[in-house]
Length: 280
Image (cartoon, rainbow, N blue to C red):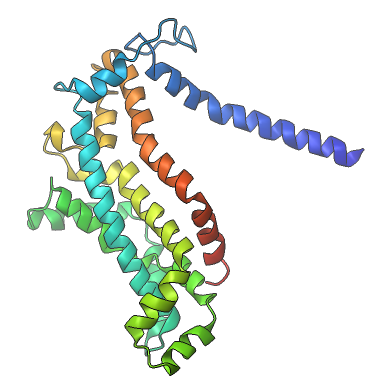
């Protein structure tokens, strides 16, 4: 009886939490199909429905809404950051997990200490460095910053590589395989789950970032913005009553690519997280 009551209470709590979590998301979705442009707090569901918000978002750019340009900018930054960051993390993880050299433990300890510093504390210094190099208001500069420190996040992938039996690497060495061949032919094919995890994680950072993007892209040229900056601009006091429903539509569209990516790669993503947490 106690177990039954406990199970009922747990499910009720989970149901309440699910409803609280879903209410704003559902409201965002239904508002994006609203025929009313501003914030309508009188009704949870719109009294009139329309696809005009998506049409305006994707096919009718104006001085406020240039969503296609924002989406393209964000996609370029996220894709290049994802590729560079994943390569860096794989190389550092392999070196720390499969190779033995002087100073290895000291480098890992230093990396852990550096990762403890909050990123926002570094933003002002990074901004002025990029300003001296002429890389502010530049997508290239943002890719450099997003990718530069990615190698420090090697711990999860290193933990996954630590679970690969050492006998496989030793057997390959006995067969005369070089370090590069061991890496590409033995280790990397076995690391597909953690590589997928790293790809998704590296893609998400620039895709949803607002703070650093806002700091870097401050020229006022709206066509150079990312999606996060553009959507935030729609919430200004003078614009929110005309563009709130368009903002909701933009929030739906920007969530589609990463949702599809996550659904396709969910199996490998979960395997990568659990496998990488076995050893540190």
